[in-house]
Length: 448
Image 1 (tube, rainbow, N blue to C red):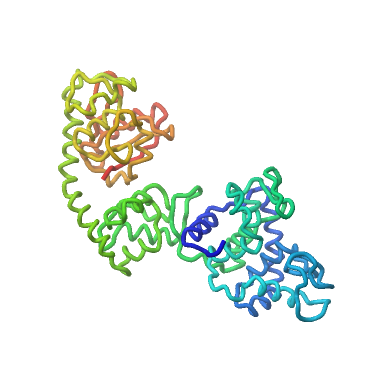
Image 2: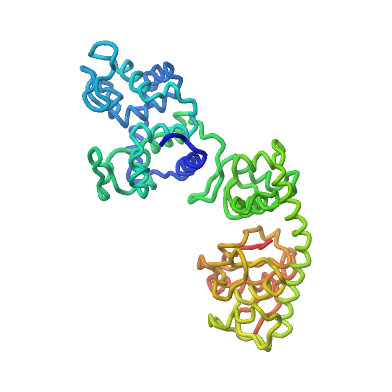
């Protein structure tokens, strides 16, 4: 592994952020961390000589010598002689027995830690993984290195049991370096530089003041509001949906319009960096498209209300061969369809974006509440406009969907959920019915 690329740095940052200690291992991890903190002064002496953080020295000491101050930091050999294991014959200068500090400085200088300048989390994890070697990454990429992630949710099994000999069933009994680093950080024992995070949807959710600041920028910036919901410091579906909308409106390339809130978006929304010319051109084109959004939304509503007018000729069917058969023929009657297919027909006939997937409408592709939940942007209930949809859960793939035909505190919907055909009713009425039948959660979605 020659260099720490941006892509690799993002991987390290996300893994670190989502790293959870296995409950059965927490006591063991905390015991190690307490010993590190107790020996901080010895680690600081070595760290100062090389211009690096003390906690990185401490983590390596645990990994290579079990925090035994009578052992070489290079590989755990005794200080009474030069090292015999790889790297052998260290330190070259001086005579044994060596002090632990002499050996530690030599070991870290040998690994060029004194030349390294990036002490952010990605930079540290890159150097730590390199200390042990990139064999897992190069030869067994399905296994995240236990040298970093053992005792965490990121590692289960798979281990080199000897030089060049990998066992897919062996399990590391040693706590990973990244796990120790994070526990030092979480426990307030080390001021680890996490750097500017790329905010993403994770489980558990990312939280913190940087999430709140991102939500404030999404709620109010020089580009307007992107409706992230409340400023609660949790990077959830609404914030992710607002991020996706912001990237689209600011002119990000199609492949970069996603739910990741990174440093570049911070700079654009905060006014610290102007939009590059290609972004400005895409933004202008997309805003011209968005100006026709109002007319498209009106057509979605008109088709939904058309369904109410012709409810006597619209049956209810989940038959896959007929529910979307009218995609290519507007206003076909009689019609047999279900709630999600009816909403899809309204969108298709209105010339709106496909609510189920990118690209053209296709009756052979999924068009269900589940595909809408996967594809559409989450919005707060207060931001719902005519032409948006609301889905009731559970299950996680959705139970029922309605089209919003009028906004307000109690939005007006069109619901097609039974053989009586589409009907117009208030959100409160549909919600009460769904709650009585075990579907008490709602998700509001927009294709715009």
